[in-house]
Length: 85
Image (cartoon, one colour):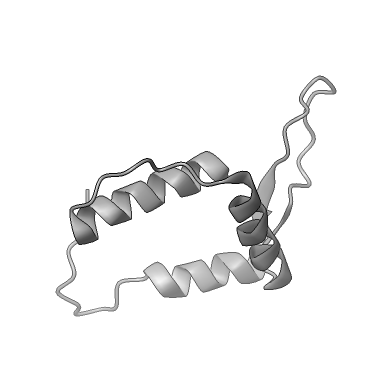
């Protein structure tokens, strides 16, 4: 999740500001972001089972988070917004 967020911030900066900088997020900042997403009910610890040797933490969107994301990213009918493929 941290790497994905870092990459998205890097892409956003490059597209919006033409700025290219180190996309890494400090651990302390990432923990703050994660707590905010948890507190808002957007993510939860993944319920999916993993092998015992896998010590990584996994997160998933809550149903509320998925619905909220769809509202943010949905392209309204008749909109002239192009899909970035």
